[in-house]
Image (cartoon, rainbow, N blue to C red):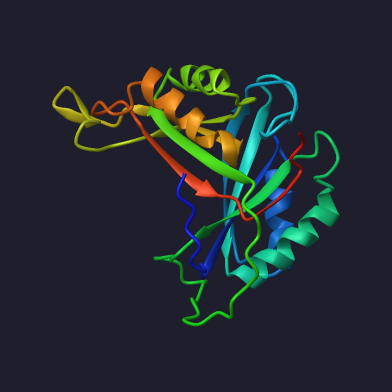
Length: 222
């Protein structure tokens, strides 16, 4: 998979924890310089936390998404790990990915010239798959056939050129499922290929897959 080595100006922090913990994560993140975030509900799919976000089969999870500059993210990541001890089993997982720009946030001011930072050896990648409702388990199974240990499923809705249907002459946004899989870099391509083939992702309306490089992570077990 392509590894883009440009220096990003914005970090996304993903925190996956047991149901009910999301608000505490958000509160602590604010104490360490992050202005806000979003909490999603999800569910796990296997019974250990090897390269995924899970600890109990079908356990409800909360996914907290935070955004800030690199330096604040780096500090907050360390402090969140101290507070919630992600290195311990069943305590959750936290990792960061990069974005080049954020639009629409009044709380974040981008800096044109951030100083360079060391390049960490790429070990993990975040695979995000968006499919029609009812297909998420098929995604998980296809990923497992290629070496994945599981993932997290989030319910969503979507609308696009191939996505809307009519009910009493009204557009209906079909329900979607988002699958998040944390993968070792050396098996990402095999996982994506398996999902792409078995779910026929290349056909219009069947879904979309994208990959993000993981910069730092706590709570990942092998």
